[in-house]
Image 1 (cartoon, one colour):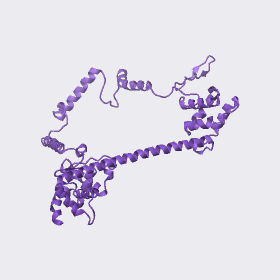
Image 2: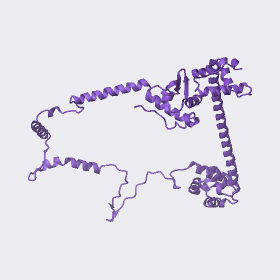
Image 3: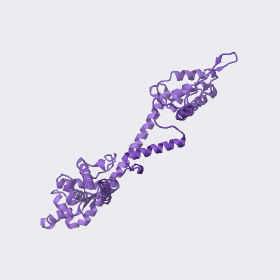
Image 4: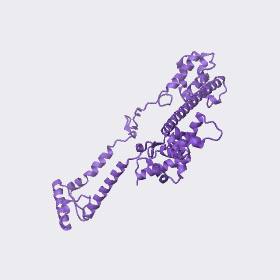
Amino acid sequence: MTWVKLDDGFARNRKIAKLSDGAFRLHVSALCWCAEQLTDGHIAAGELREVSTLTPTRARRLAGELVKLGVWDVVPDGWTIHDFLDYNPSRSKVLAEREATARRQQAWRDRHRNGVTNGVTDPSTDGPPDQNHAENEQKTAETSAESGVKTGTFQPDETINDGEYDQLTAHVDQQDHADRNAVTNARPVPVPVPSPNGEEELPPPTPSTDAHSDDGGGGENPEVGELLDHVARAWNRPAASLAPLTTAAAAALATWPADALRRHLATDPPDDLDTAPGLLRHRLDTLPTGPATCGRRCCTTWRSQTDAADRARRAAASADQVQAIANELAAEAARDAAVNDAITEALGPTLTARLVAARCAPGVRPLPGYVRGLLATAYAEHGYLLEDIRAEAAALPDVRNAS
């Protein structure tokens, strides 16, 4: 069984999104059928009824829609799904993988049929069980004698000397030593040290290596410095006088845009130099939740300018989108016109005139634009298959005989 590969953005593809429901279903059915039949995306004209349960007329009309949108391509004997092999394996690759899988499974069956497994056996266990056990016990005893370590299980009445006990418990001491010397991220616990007067005192705390700013933050915020410098310049005051308000300014920047906050704080400077820090502190403490809720003129002006800029950006984005759609439609129209012109040239004037005469409404003058529309409809009904279009035109009566 094969699989069809559809990425998670398939339905949002520019071409796929324009398909009608019937054309979308026909396309998905064709993908599954081509993967099952290993056709490399090719659909012959006579195989369209195998792809879908639609009537032949409706299936060809939907195939024409797929061709028009560039999802399918027309070939002499039918259609091919555009870029099918870019996302799905080819027939040769699928057959090669199936053959390799069959050989691998047959080799596995042959191995198990002959009693051979993939397990690795120990050559030393080829003898009888009793002989193997005796040999293993002898090897263990020899190894223990060489290392000087007593092995085996101890019986309740068995005694060992001090040297044997030290060897048996050496690994416990080593593990305990490793645990005691393990490095952790915890801070060391202060150990009391004796003082000259005989009382125990804790050592002075070790200075922390963590970097913290005086204002309680994790470091200086460049926007805070720019804000205070802007206010100091607007009020013609030294920036050092506003430095104690760094923490409050940083908290205000968390809910206010920087440009709006600069306007709100710097407007209406104080007359007295000594009242500047106090006025700034008051404005920071009574700051609204945002510029949208502030009634001061500086904030209303900022909102008007911001809204105008947003409208301009949206208008520019809409214009770009409209232009992109117009360019896309123009490209599609040019491609459709090229396909229709190629079919018209291949049919010749006689067969083309028959198609136009059969579809032209009585009493309507066949102007060039009207004729192109009639022919485009006729071509789409046959899925842009030249042989089918030529067969229909040949079956129609000659225009001179009909007149």
